[in-house]
Structures are given as C-alpha cells and as structure tokens.
Length: 287
Image (tube, rainbow, N blue to C red):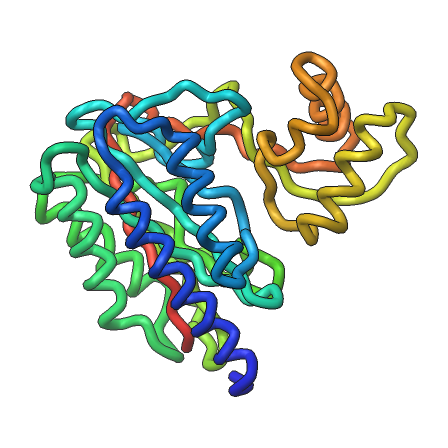
C-alpha cells in the first residue's frame, strides 16, 4: 500500500476513534438518537473527515441500517443494546468501525461474544488468509457463548469511495477459498445474537446511495440525485441530510421514484428474524 494512501487511512482511523470515544460518553439513558448521530457526524467533519455513510444507531433487535429520520423522537432506554457504526473517509479512503453498548449495564454476554469473536478473527487476518478460515473462527467463538452469528451479514473489503467491496467475509461457516491480498483494506465486523441468526429487511428506509443518472421530471428528484452524486460523492447518505430539498410526502415520493427508476439504492432497516438481541463489533484492517 502506498505510504500516502496509508497515511490517509490512518488519519481516518484517528478521526473515527475520537468520534467513537465521544459516542461512548454521550450514549446514555434518555438521550435522543438523532442528537447522538448529529454530534458524531459534526465531530467527524470538524476534525477534517468526510462521512463515508450516515452514523448507524441500531437498537436491540435492529442489526443495521438504522439512522435517525427527520425529527426522529427515538430515545435510549435502560438496558437497550445500542450498536453505533461509524464511517470516516479521507479523500475517499474509508475507516469503518463499530461498537455496542448496553445502557446502564456494561456486562452483556452478546456484546462480549461479538468483541471476542472479532479479536479471534484479527489474530488470523493477514495476506494469504482464506475467507473460510476467518468465518470459522468467528462462528466458533460465538458458539462458545451459546450464541449465533448473523449468517447473512459479513465483513467486507474497502475501496476508495466504496464502502462494500470484494471480498465478503461472512459471519458464518462457508467454503469461500478466496485469499486476502496484501495492500488491501478489510472492514471486519462481527454480529452476534441470541435469536435465529439471520436478518430480514424491514419496511423503513433512512439510507440511500447514488447509482446512476436518468432523465427525471420531478424537480425534487433531480436535486436529490445531484446532491447524492456530487455532494455525497456517490456514498450512502441519510434521508435527514436532504430534508431541506422537500418536506413530508414530497420527499418520500421523490425518493421512492428514484429507487424505482434505478437511480438510487435503498438500504432497508435490518431486523433479527426472531427479534433476538444483536451486538456488533467492527474495525478496519490494513493488510
């Protein structure tokens, strides 16, 4: 990996760590999720980083893709298991990291299993390691706690301005023989649960990503697409980031039209299939 590129990754890492520290301090009972999200995002930007994706704040059985909506009134309650997923980029080079905290209680077996499974994976992640070997370590560690991993979520490669790139590293056992390559970046993330072990898409969508331009009649849709392409650099963005373009039903209609026409990709909220509690731990590795 080029030294200048590595330096950008390390800068993104430093900004991410500061943002996570702030999140851990601010994450308390009674706090609004939108306040926490905005605090984290503002800190990333004020420290010179870019937002690789909206801060994900997913509670209890919600595994991923929840970021607060416009005027969101969701608050943290005692014993909530809260996952905070932070993406920082510097010139497109992304540092992807996440932690889980239980409100009012530091001890939680699901969180501990996720953290230890990630630690076990990090011990063997290196150039030449095979995907199936890493996944085996992750799932077997979770099983020692009597828990499951989320089989349809995975770690993943990172490329410039691309959050999810090849290869995928599933949380569950597989036969993927791909070797990790020197000079690449991997976002290794582990999801553990006391539920069914897989997630389903919900009906709510608060995160979108640019795919392509098309001729559009709606002025609101054209503005959203332009912002997604240029201001957000084709990376995932939050619905609340574009609330000034249109309000209420007009905004929802424009977003739905953009998804239907193939201009935007939608990221539905992901929920554990049997409403099991989910923990997530993640970091980025430079090979």
